[in-house]
Length: 100
Image 1 (cartoon, helix red, strand yellow):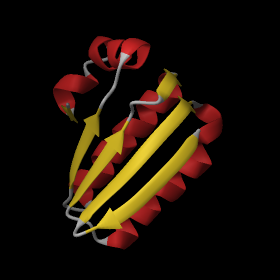
Image 2 (spheres, rainbow, N blue to C red; image 1 turned 135 degrees about the vertical axis):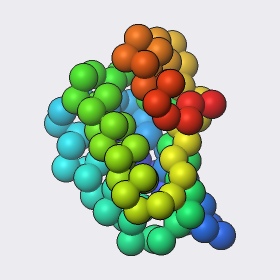
Image 3 (cartoon, one colour; image 1 turned 90 degrees about the vertical axis):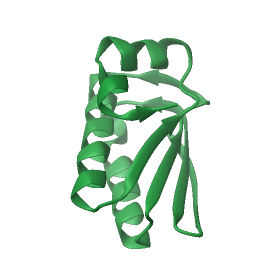
Image 4 (tube, rainbow, N blue to C red; image 1 turned 180 degrees about the vertical axis):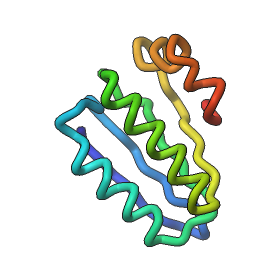
C-alpha cells in the first residue's frame, strides 16, 4: 500500500494506491490515528489507484467506518473502480458506507 494524505480546512484526504491487504494493517492503523489526531470533521479516502483489496482490506475499511462514528467525522470512499468496486458491492460495504 502506498499512501498520500493531507489535512486542509477540516477535511482529511488520503489517496490509497496499489493494494490494501493484511500486510498493510500497521500502516492503515497509523493512518487512522493520524485522521483522529487531525480533528478533521470529514475524511475522504480516494481509491482510484487501488488495484487489489482482500478480506483484511475490507475489514480495515470497516474499522475506518467504526472509527469515524466513534470520533464523529464523516467518511467517504471515492473513485473505487473495477474489482475493488465489485468487492465493495458484493460485501455490501457500499450500503453501509458512503461510497461515491
